[in-house]
Amino acid sequence: MNILMLLDNEFPPDVRVESEANSLIKQGHSVTILSYNFSNKPLTEEYKGIQIVRFNINKQVAKKALGFIMQLPFYKLIWRFQINKLLKVQQFDAIHIHDLPLCINARYIKEKFSLKVVADLHENYPHLITAQPFMNSLFATLFLSKKKWFQKEKEWLMNVTEIVCVANEMKERIDLLLDHKKSIHVVPNTINFETYLSIQKPIPELKNKYANNFVVMYIGGFNALRGLKYLIQAASLLKDKISNLKVILVGDGNSMNNLTKLANDLNLSNYIIFEGWQPSNKVKAYIDIADVCVIPHVKSTQADNSSPNKLFQYMYSKKPVISSNCKSIEKIIIQEDCGLIFENKNYQDLANKILKLYEEPKLKKQLGENGYEAVINKYNWDTTVNELLNIYSN
Image (cartoon, rainbow, N blue to C red; front, side, top):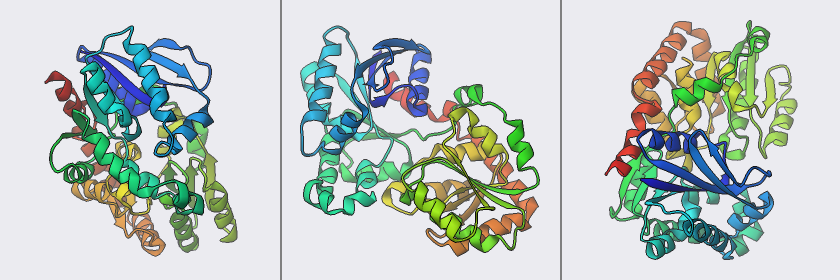
């Protein structure tokens, strides 16, 4: 089949999109990705066998267009124009839409071009958007309707042919929303060994720097929903119990200033290390120096139905994972016996779980080994991608 993927971002990079495209190509399909161009990349390019077609747009304009998708037609129309432009010169058998917003054109695509449309939902989009702090502002209350996101999710998804999502919990939510009228497939964000390992670079100086420390690691975004303030508060309870403690936070985001202030206010400058954003080829080097890896997400519908790729990266590096009690993550950790669960937002409980693994090195090692075995045998891309491949085989 000749498959056109739609992505409202610049590509590359996107680990999930690249893994899906490469797997489909290996099965004999051809894949073209229509995406934004923010940084003067070539308008057409072949990348690892994937055909990329880009169109120029200012990044802030694209962001604003998405932000006002419910109020203004710009987002819908600019994508409709680009889809029409490409389909005039190229024929496709199916359209694969990445994430909910682009599903705004699903009905149009099906009716005008008589094509099957697959919606690939990376996020629980309405819940992700409406949980953001800015949605409680006066401006958002007046101009950005929370209710409309939930209405449109159902309307747009009813117009697609098949649905892909990242977790069983997400599948159950969408299945109920759509009154069991659509076929839904789960393709979690597991490790693609081929792409993940091929780009990783060792950082010997990093290992040497923290060789004598008990390292608690977090890698990811910095925003209020990631729960990092609870990890910092937990560190304040642990600094006198774990003398060689280092909590390393890798990433960036709009909570950075608040988090650094909190760490300073709690006199934790010797214990909390802000490493900033790091390129994806350094991720494994950071994970490998950790004793424990933490996913402290604030519990929400989005977090309960998510599949963070860092979970599987932590497990692959034989690191025990301490996570808040978000359903989809909690289920895997308990089922595979690869970590410990703490109560969402409870930094005392989080501190206790970290201390437990510090005091019980045999348990720490066993949980890490269990996680590794689970990734090797079950939670890897070669195994989990079959759900996606079956859609196009059938």
